Length: 267
Image (cartoon, rainbow, N blue to C red):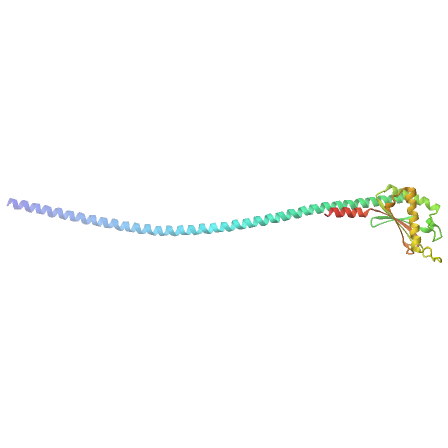
């Protein structure tokens, strides 16, 4: 009997132990299931966050690529602008250099013109001081002109081309001014009145030229005026100013030297 009781107690203990173990197992299973659900939830959240992160990464990469492209375009535009700016700068520098050169050329020409004008004015003043109010003295186109009546120089005979003694004094004064200005060129223009020549030995052109040449010879021989400075011409009966027969001595700077200077300056 005692043995049976012992067996029953043992079996009861085993049953209680098994029941307790089963309960513990159930609790453990429930706990594991809870942890599994939590893990699955965490995994799902991680995957969702991973997808969000991947989307952000792709968005950032797209933005980076867009920024790279924008920067590349900006750099390209900057290079183009710099190149264009350099070209404009070179063009401006070239233009400024050309303007400076042109200004220097114009300054040379202007200085030459001013010098010629100053010399012409000085010669005009010298003639005025030396000759007074008679004969007529004018300034035109950069030249000084002294106009003398042929009847005073050559006498009343219109065919005469020998300078009268009384005219030597005024020619001497003219010669002194011309000698004092060796850089000036001289043109002597004489016109003869309309003369009827029965023998046709001399016409009006020839008389005018002979009269101009007579004055040129005096200036050369008596007042040492270089002949290469002098040009003597006749104008026939084509009168000068209001005087029907007159001789005009035109004194002017050597314009061919001025034109040569201009030509050299413009190279």
